[in-house]
Amino acid sequence: MTMKSAHTPSTTVKKATAGHSMKPRQLTMMGLGSAIGAGLFLGSGAGVQAAGPAVLVSYLVAGTLIILVMWALGEMAASNPTSGAFSVYAERALGRTAGATIGWLWWLQLVVVIAAEALGAAGLLFSVWPVVPVWALALLFMVVFTGINLAGVRNFGEFEFWFAILKVAVIILFLAVGTALLLGLLPGVVSPGTANLTGNFAPQGLGGVAAALFVVIFAFGGTEIVSVAAAETEDPERSVGKAIRTVVWRILVFYIGSVFVIAAVLPATSKSLASPFAGVLDAARIPGASTAITLVAVVALLSALNANLYGASRMVYSLAQRGEAPRVLTRLNGAGVPLLAVTVSVAFGFIATVLELLFPERILPALFQLVGSTCLVVWGSALVSQLILRRRADRDGLPLPLRMKGFPGLTILGLVLLGLIFAVGFSAEASRVQLFSTFTLIAGIALACAAGARVTGRKRAANR
Image (cartoon, rainbow, N blue to C red; front, side, top):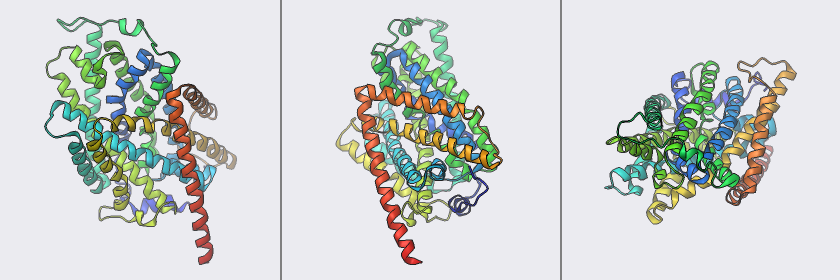
């Protein structure tokens, strides 16, 4: 990680955007806000349906992997905070085409996630307020959050901070109610005990665990946005380290704790898994609680949409600065926000609202299926980049402000887990199709990036 050497893209990003106006507390909560969204509030139910209680195995495996990825990303982001994040790190470690491919892949992933979260929030709100159709609510959300992202990073960060605070408080309350229900402490309510967990732990066997794994990975996708936001944060070296250190307990408490309660209370065949948090509170017979948690889930999804739109716009902005996207995407508005980068990042979300109007209730499941395995490729690139750049830095004797402990063992462990996930994924028919689709997409992006690099190379040579 030759962090002392000059690198025009990262330097330009710091000067051209809103600078270091995001607070450390906002960065920490953004990492949480981007991850606690559709994947947890909706995808957790799909995971239980696919694997039964064995979905906990999927969460433990994916949780361990994302912890290792975040440690690796934290080391690189603290040394080189840039809006291109892992795309820039891949470029330095593996070359220009690799960096551009990872950047475009992640941008496409977030573009799809933004649409999924708008539709997911609209669907939940429609379930308790069936007045405005889902497509119209999704369209409204897209307009509002596009405006918020165009208002400037300071306002965006504060908005996201309070969104995340609300989600944390509600999940803690949900865990308290779920625990009381399981322990038989709620008056007039019979505890389901451990029957759902022990009766048929893995009804679909290894194939079910594999299928759930990609749903779970989608849930964790977005946590890596911390490394992107580091470029616009006060004291990024210290802020990134603090944000990374909180990943472990977040995953253990919020994800695994919530899914444990859901799997214990709701059978894998329950229709309530369509909205699992509300289903658990209905089982606890708390008046109005299911409606309240549904509304909070809407807020959670919109918070994740907000954070992911920020991440997508900054990534395509960085690509444009490095000559991997049209230069027009680097134009800023008066608030220091890349106006056109935000615009192109929300375009698919608006298209998805039209598709929802034409094909009701079909778009969200398709979007969930599309983006799960792309997260794995992005995370794998981060681990490989950190392995190469850390060794390069150690060889050259360069100091690093934040060093990943257990290197290279833990980085290699992350790559081994990643390899096992791919192996399991290719063994199951449903995930095999998804993986082949993902690698076909990557090959197409890589070819396009390589061709683009040759064209720009010729133009530069001709202008000399």
